[in-house]
Image 1 (cartoon, rainbow, N blue to C red):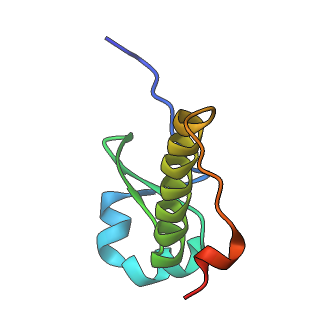
Image 2 (image 1 turned 180 degrees about the horizontal axis):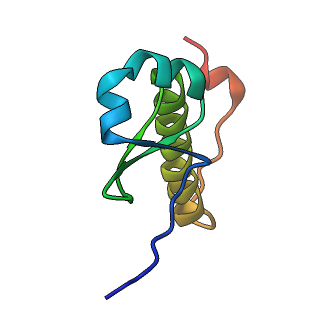
Length: 86
């Protein structure tokens, strides 16, 4: 049983406060994550749409980087630039 738990946000809010003023909390947070606490433990993380989209972009970039690393050193094909033009 763990007594402590890591919170991955600089800002926290209780479930009660979130219900009372969700718009204000989002406005105050800006593009930073907010940990939503239930009985003083993180139950969820709240992100603005902009921050969520940026997170998805980073995940996609990481997946593409993994593909590039896997393909590095593989078979190559020489092509002339003129062959690529329509």
